[in-house]
Length: 122
Length: 140
Image (cartoon, rainbow over all chains, first blue to last red; front, side):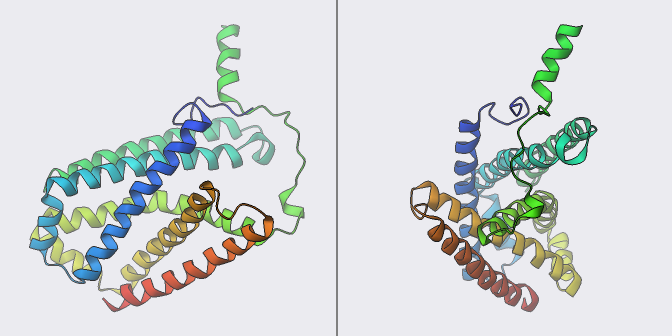
């Protein structure tokens, strides 16, 4: 039995759903960006700033970075609890995994704060 | 203290006496396995590449000067290669992820054969998108 205490939603079903909803948000953002760059292959600074300065775009970008945060948390949890195990790498696996999970969470929080700083500093 | 310790252990430790019925290193893997493993690898790469993407976003929006210096930086082949590699990981991850979402809707999960075919489709679509991305990134 794998511990669920370090997973995002404490339950596999909740993580499963969050992983899919966040995937849809990020896919929508990617398709939006692709369409933007097809229409404006080489945007000027003013165009680019106007796009990201609008409230709608800030909210869209914020939702996307929050989706990245949740999606990465769940995905990295899956990878770490699958491969950094006592069976695969020996008795030190548990402290190594805990360290990597904490580092992963710290990096996610750093990304979120950095993104908010970028978006609301425009 | 002992109670606390065992309580924490039950939370944090993946129990070691689980039955092991497959040794992945000794079996020939089907295409679906490679598509799945590459989905994981690209996901881990992307988690680290978010730093690069945020740096690009930051540079592009901080000021007119930083926007111009980003443009200059992205005209060097090395920077273009790094961006292309990150976008390639993203493209693969999205294409393989869309396969999962479609299967979650109950489409294409009826047999191993359809799973194998959709896995090959992921490889083909991803290669086409990644080559197109090279055309965009290296010629901008």
